[in-house]
Amino acid sequence: MSPQLKLALDMGPLVVFFAAYFVAKRALEDDTQGLIWATGLFVIVTVIALAITYVIERKVHAMPLITGAVVLLMGGLTVYFNDERFIKYKPTIVSGFMGSTLLIGWAMGRSLIKPLLGSTLELDEEGWRKLTLRWGFFFLAIAGLNELVWRSTTTAVWLNFKLFGILGLTFLFMFLQQPLLQRHGQDSKDKE
Image (cartoon, rainbow, N blue to C red; front, side, top):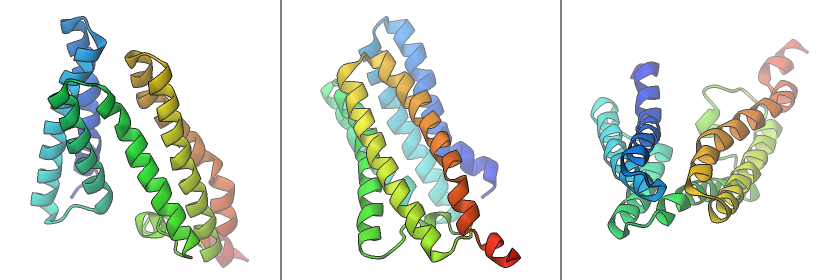
């Protein structure tokens, strides 16, 4: 699969979700109903993206499959019960699951992030252990932040946090990992 198509299939459902929310919010003049309509579309587009991925690759990787299952479950509950809280739980569930999985793997002496990033990063074993631990805590922090934001603010503020806050924090976190990547990268070992 081409990188452009992969990006479109990975990010397309989110783009549709946010675009649908802003259109539905204006048309319905209601944040909650706008979110519920956008969630219904999000579920449909996510299923389509997973199906296209399967048709092209004859498999769906674990993370998109887990995320898709949570979107289907929580999005379906949001639409069925006409209750926005379910879709607001989704980032908590996905981030909490990812963080817990990474930390359990780390405690068992396994770097579960290595199979995900091993094709793009070359680190020594200590680097993988440290990176796994950091990503585990980062995902748990995002889960906690999501809970704090959606429970204490409006739907519009939560959506801005979900779109810009989580994305911004993720990029900042990745940037802050550069010293670790340089210290434990295989390239730095080869030069010594």
